[in-house]
Length: 163
Image (cartoon, rainbow, N blue to C red; front, side, top):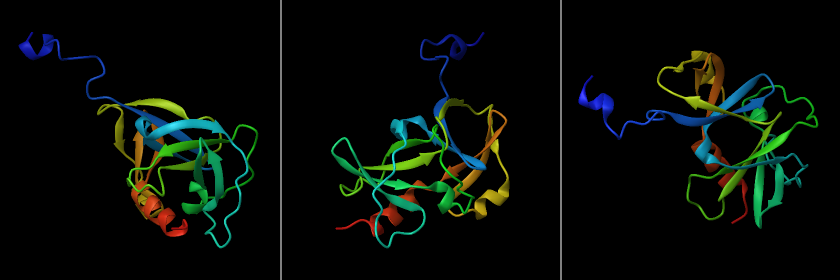
Protein backbone atom coordinates (compact mmCIF):
# COMPACT_ATOMS: atom_id res chain seq x y z
CA UNK A 1 0.00 0.00 0.00
CA UNK A 2 1.44 3.36 -1.03
CA UNK A 3 1.18 6.58 0.95
CA UNK A 4 -1.26 8.03 -1.60
CA UNK A 5 -3.61 5.08 -1.01
CA UNK A 6 -4.09 5.84 2.68
CA UNK A 7 -3.91 9.62 2.57
CA UNK A 8 -6.68 11.31 4.57
CA UNK A 9 -7.30 13.58 1.55
CA UNK A 10 -8.54 10.63 -0.47
CA UNK A 11 -12.32 10.47 -0.26
CA UNK A 12 -14.77 8.12 -1.85
CA UNK A 13 -16.18 10.89 -4.08
CA UNK A 14 -12.83 12.12 -5.41
CA UNK A 15 -12.85 12.44 -9.19
CA UNK A 16 -16.62 12.30 -9.24
CA UNK A 17 -19.07 14.92 -10.47
CA UNK A 18 -22.73 14.85 -9.61
CA UNK A 19 -24.69 15.25 -12.79
CA UNK A 20 -28.31 15.44 -13.77
CA UNK A 21 -29.99 13.70 -16.71
CA UNK A 22 -32.83 15.79 -18.10
CA UNK A 23 -35.34 13.75 -20.14
CA UNK A 24 -36.40 15.08 -23.53
CA UNK A 25 -38.46 13.44 -26.26
CA UNK A 26 -35.97 11.18 -28.03
CA UNK A 27 -32.91 12.29 -26.07
CA UNK A 28 -31.69 13.47 -22.68
CA UNK A 29 -29.35 16.21 -21.55
CA UNK A 30 -26.43 15.75 -19.19
CA UNK A 31 -25.41 18.72 -17.05
CA UNK A 32 -23.53 19.24 -13.80
CA UNK A 33 -25.98 19.24 -10.90
CA UNK A 34 -24.36 22.46 -9.62
CA UNK A 35 -26.02 24.36 -12.50
CA UNK A 36 -29.51 23.36 -11.35
CA UNK A 37 -31.12 25.86 -8.96
CA UNK A 38 -34.48 24.07 -8.68
CA UNK A 39 -36.85 21.70 -10.47
CA UNK A 40 -40.47 22.87 -10.50
CA UNK A 41 -43.75 21.61 -11.94
CA UNK A 42 -44.38 22.72 -15.50
CA UNK A 43 -46.59 25.71 -15.98
CA UNK A 44 -47.42 27.33 -19.29
CA UNK A 45 -45.30 30.42 -19.91
CA UNK A 46 -46.37 33.84 -21.15
CA UNK A 47 -45.55 33.91 -24.88
CA UNK A 48 -42.93 36.35 -26.19
CA UNK A 49 -43.98 38.00 -29.43
CA UNK A 50 -41.58 37.31 -32.30
CA UNK A 51 -39.52 34.78 -30.30
CA UNK A 52 -37.95 31.77 -32.06
CA UNK A 53 -39.68 28.35 -31.69
CA UNK A 54 -37.30 27.19 -28.98
CA UNK A 55 -38.06 30.17 -26.70
CA UNK A 56 -41.49 29.17 -25.40
CA UNK A 57 -42.01 32.33 -23.35
CA UNK A 58 -41.29 33.49 -19.84
CA UNK A 59 -42.69 33.11 -16.35
CA UNK A 60 -42.22 34.61 -12.93
CA UNK A 61 -40.02 32.60 -10.57
CA UNK A 62 -38.82 33.83 -7.17
CA UNK A 63 -39.06 37.47 -8.19
CA UNK A 64 -37.20 36.88 -11.47
CA UNK A 65 -38.41 36.68 -15.05
CA UNK A 66 -37.45 33.19 -16.20
CA UNK A 67 -37.14 32.57 -19.96
CA UNK A 68 -38.40 29.07 -20.80
CA UNK A 69 -36.53 27.05 -23.41
CA UNK A 70 -37.49 23.91 -25.29
CA UNK A 71 -34.20 22.14 -25.97
CA UNK A 72 -36.18 19.74 -28.16
CA UNK A 73 -37.15 22.59 -30.49
CA UNK A 74 -33.59 23.96 -30.41
CA UNK A 75 -32.12 20.53 -31.14
CA UNK A 76 -34.75 19.92 -33.85
CA UNK A 77 -36.29 16.95 -32.06
CA UNK A 78 -40.05 16.24 -32.18
CA UNK A 79 -41.66 18.08 -29.28
CA UNK A 80 -45.01 16.35 -28.88
CA UNK A 81 -47.33 17.31 -26.06
CA UNK A 82 -46.26 17.74 -22.47
CA UNK A 83 -47.83 15.41 -19.94
CA UNK A 84 -48.51 15.74 -16.24
CA UNK A 85 -44.92 14.66 -15.43
CA UNK A 86 -43.36 17.63 -17.27
CA UNK A 87 -41.03 19.80 -15.24
CA UNK A 88 -39.05 23.01 -15.57
CA UNK A 89 -35.38 22.75 -14.69
CA UNK A 90 -34.32 26.17 -13.43
CA UNK A 91 -30.63 26.61 -14.25
CA UNK A 92 -28.13 29.14 -12.96
CA UNK A 93 -26.89 31.15 -15.94
CA UNK A 94 -23.11 31.20 -16.34
CA UNK A 95 -22.75 34.46 -18.29
CA UNK A 96 -22.83 36.68 -15.22
CA UNK A 97 -25.19 39.05 -17.07
CA UNK A 98 -27.71 40.59 -14.67
CA UNK A 99 -30.40 40.44 -17.39
CA UNK A 100 -30.20 36.64 -17.37
CA UNK A 101 -29.47 35.22 -13.91
CA UNK A 102 -31.51 32.04 -14.59
CA UNK A 103 -33.07 30.14 -17.46
CA UNK A 104 -35.64 27.37 -17.52
CA UNK A 105 -35.38 24.16 -19.54
CA UNK A 106 -38.50 22.09 -20.21
CA UNK A 107 -38.12 18.44 -19.20
CA UNK A 108 -40.49 15.59 -20.10
CA UNK A 109 -40.36 14.26 -16.53
CA UNK A 110 -38.36 14.54 -13.33
CA UNK A 111 -34.60 14.76 -13.98
CA UNK A 112 -32.39 12.09 -12.40
CA UNK A 113 -29.18 12.56 -10.48
CA UNK A 114 -26.23 10.56 -11.75
CA UNK A 115 -22.65 10.13 -10.61
CA UNK A 116 -20.15 10.92 -13.36
CA UNK A 117 -16.71 9.36 -13.07
CA UNK A 118 -13.86 8.64 -15.46
CA UNK A 119 -14.96 5.00 -15.41
CA UNK A 120 -18.58 5.55 -16.46
CA UNK A 121 -18.18 8.43 -18.96
CA UNK A 122 -17.20 7.85 -22.58
CA UNK A 123 -17.63 9.64 -25.89
CA UNK A 124 -20.99 9.09 -27.53
CA UNK A 125 -22.24 9.21 -31.07
CA UNK A 126 -20.26 11.75 -33.12
CA UNK A 127 -23.44 12.65 -35.03
CA UNK A 128 -24.54 14.59 -31.94
CA UNK A 129 -21.89 17.19 -32.77
CA UNK A 130 -24.10 18.20 -35.70
CA UNK A 131 -27.19 18.75 -33.55
CA UNK A 132 -27.96 22.43 -32.91
CA UNK A 133 -27.66 23.28 -29.23
CA UNK A 134 -25.46 20.26 -28.45
CA UNK A 135 -21.75 20.45 -27.63
CA UNK A 136 -21.21 16.70 -27.68
CA UNK A 137 -22.77 13.33 -27.24
CA UNK A 138 -21.66 11.14 -24.36
CA UNK A 139 -22.44 7.81 -22.83
CA UNK A 140 -22.68 7.92 -19.05
CA UNK A 141 -23.32 4.71 -17.10
CA UNK A 142 -24.33 3.13 -20.43
CA UNK A 143 -26.91 5.81 -21.31
CA UNK A 144 -26.66 8.14 -24.31
CA UNK A 145 -26.99 11.86 -23.59
CA UNK A 146 -26.23 15.24 -25.14
CA UNK A 147 -24.24 17.94 -23.42
CA UNK A 148 -26.06 21.20 -24.13
CA UNK A 149 -24.18 24.26 -25.38
CA UNK A 150 -25.32 26.54 -22.57
CA UNK A 151 -22.93 29.36 -23.50
CA UNK A 152 -24.46 29.62 -26.97
CA UNK A 153 -27.96 29.29 -25.50
CA UNK A 154 -27.33 32.15 -23.07
CA UNK A 155 -25.96 34.36 -25.87
CA UNK A 156 -29.06 33.60 -27.98
CA UNK A 157 -31.38 34.31 -25.03
CA UNK A 158 -29.68 37.65 -24.31
CA UNK A 159 -30.39 38.66 -27.92
CA UNK A 160 -34.09 37.91 -27.36
CA UNK A 161 -34.50 39.66 -24.00
CA UNK A 162 -35.37 43.34 -23.75
CA UNK A 163 -32.55 45.65 -22.61
